[in-house]
Image (cartoon, one colour):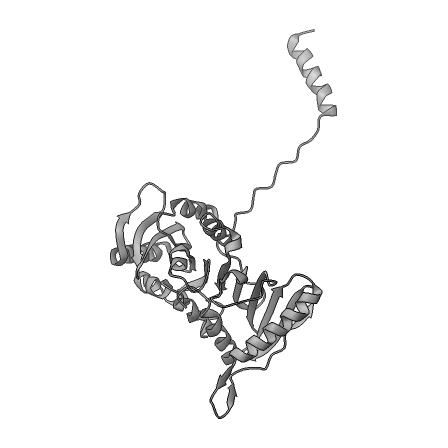
Length: 307
């Protein structure tokens, strides 16, 4: 029997008992938020605490929420240098280790997902580098990057994707490269306008004392119509019993913060609000007006770097 015929018969026999391997689905691109966490994590462990906020700027257009991201240290200054208006932003994410120390402004990661054309984005980047240059451009990365001075902070400005401009800690070239393969920031869920969060706040991330039993907390602000909004608050405690204690602590401190002492009387700005325990969590769902929601955003903003 010819060798070629023997080979074909052999392969035919093997085909009957071969295991079919399904091709792997292509990996989904990481979102830029995950990369931002990795960048900060290489500098300080998660146990040190984190403060972060995600602004859905375009969705909140026409409200104070759309402008709140400019108040975080360096972001307004940088957006002015880029010449980017709030209506040209899709969303903004900012992450740092705490809200009060100057070092947190140096370690912070700010990611701007914009709606600019490629030509407009390139011109915006060039304008910012010309205004803020602190050592010139970094060549050979395959995308625009430059060391800049934002206020008094040395930063790395990068445009790793057509839709992202990032302000990173100075020298963070590896982090900028990691952003190349991302699919942008997390998309808006339902009617979200802003999400604010803190992890390990007991380590001073917010600049004031927080019970050690609270490991994380976040607040989601949604816009429900022309005049209504909702704030959904969640904090994680150690167990159901401790959650009851923490709920009372949060209720007292939030309502105290919303009350102004006028000496002859007390003026309550918002509330009062009640926080309750659900298993090992402290939760509250607050129905507020748009104006009240913007006041809540203003308060949350003070807990961001330089806010």
